[in-house]
Amino acid sequence: MIVTTAMLMDNLKDYKAPANKIARMVENKEIVPIVRGLYETDPDTAGHLLAASIYAPSYLSFDYALSYHDLIPEAVYNYTSATYDKKKKKMYTNHFGTYLFRDIPKKAYPNGISLVHEGSYSFLIATAEKAICDKIYTLSPVSSQKSIVELLFENLRIDKAEFDVLDHEKMIQYAKLYQTTNHKLLIKLLRRKYVRSV
Image (tube, one colour):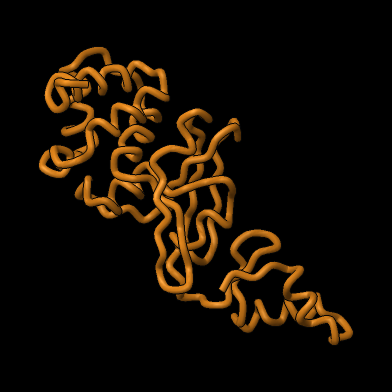
C-alpha cells in the first residue's frame, strides 16, 4: 500500500517523535521510500504499479508499453512514462526500479490510455496504438515511406504480425495529434496498406 508522510504522521501522532519513528520504520524495512514524502508498505510490490504516484500526471508508455503489449521482443526493465508540459526529461531510481518520464504534446496526452487493475492497485498505460505514436515522437524524423517501415519493423523491431492486427483507424486518429514528420509518414503508411477507406 502506498502511504504518505502525512498519513504516517497522523497514525503515529501518539509518539513523542513520530518523524524519528518513521526513520526507524524505513531502517527496519517496514516501509520503503518511493520518492520524498511517499512510501510503499510492501517491498515486493511490482514497480510499474508505482509509476504514476512518482510523477503526475503520467501514464506508462514508450518502450515499457511496447513490451507490455508484446510488440517488441526485448524485455524492458525501466518504467517509461509519458507526461506533458514538464519541459524536460525526469529520472527517478528507488528500491523498485528506474523510472523515466518525458513529454508528449498536450493535445495527444489524454487519448489512448487504459486503466488496468492489478490486485488492490491500478495503473495507467498506453494502448498498443498509442504507445507506437508516443515512441516515434521521441525519435529523429525519417524522410520516406521506406524509412518509416524500417523504423517500425527493423529499428524498433515491432512485431509485424502484432502490428497487423492493431486498430489502425485509431492509430491514425492518435497520430494526427502529434504533427511531426514521423507521424505524417505513419498515417500515409496506414492509409496505403491498412485502412484505404480512411
